[in-house]
Image 1 (spheres, rainbow, N blue to C red):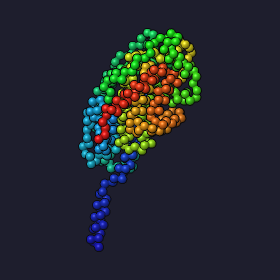
Image 2 (image 1 turned 135 degrees about the vertical axis):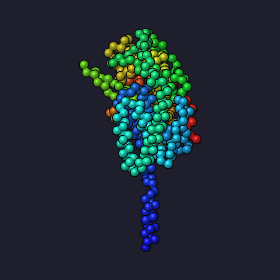
Image 3 (image 1 turned 180 degrees about the vertical axis):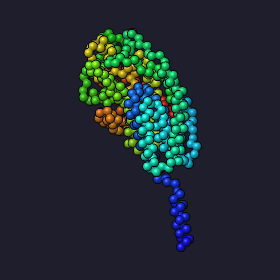
Image 4 (image 1 turned 90 degrees about the vertical axis):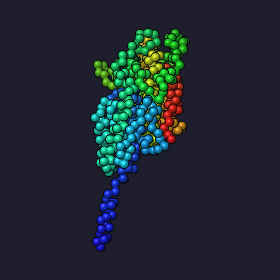
Length: 439
């Protein structure tokens, strides 16, 4: 009897000392990373980051997450040495305690938190997720070690980001607006200064230089009736004047203007919207969820998409402030119809090339590379902004619609759209050809 009791007690002690591992399957759910991306987008909208700066917020956060997540699968490789002179990230001090799924979330969240203004909003979200981890039974030592490692990788990425010339560019001179025929002028209703005129000086991730994919020159400015530029201007004018319901819906869906101002009498207020890059990061999430991608593949897709966006903005902004082309609204108001307004509010920077055309094409190449051509999806990214779902048969189809939306919206001539698409596709294909992320 005594022997039997000792055996029972010994088994109880033995099994009672076994570590709780039931939580591992739950924390591996990529929805934690998806939610973190969604929260970052929400705060970017709230803080009103410009499209180029928003792309910077996404890329460093996404690379931080991938550099942790890729350690989960030996088939994947680090991006160190491949993107923007990134040095190898540190490895966990105690692999027996660190859960790399939790650390992936932490690396993303902490990096994103540092790059935004409304830190308290991210803190609240992070603490909510911590509570969820605890409720799952994640041991305290595991949670602490995983958070510590995520922070360590985040600090490494943030130290690396400090060398990209962003902080220095905050003090560079403002863009010198030239009152010359065909040159860009600030546009209604706020006549804002040109944003990020020095973005070409930001360190790229994969492209060798800002001017590596310089597009053909824009059409020479000439408002003589019958000239090529006159015809391009009239094409914009007629497109807006003859909009049907579908084309109007396309323009509104892809507007992605983070700050649309409204004036009623002496009252001015603004509508905050998602940026073009934020829309494509949202598509990356939709694709990951539809494909039932795990943590590693999801982190890879976010990283690649954000790299395409980041380098796309550098390439596009290089051309914008070199060609410095006047916007259709300015030309039409001066030479054709002083009361004409585009469907979409003209964003505050030069016209050529179309930013949405460039970055959408690059992002589509990235996502096609991860999930394949012919990946059909329902784009619900704009639902929170009151716009209905649109369906696409591929990422390329979506990017093509995003590009032509700029004509329907009245903010771009066709060469900026067509050459912008070519610019983005070349850039995207180059990035794919340069990165080696799988064994």
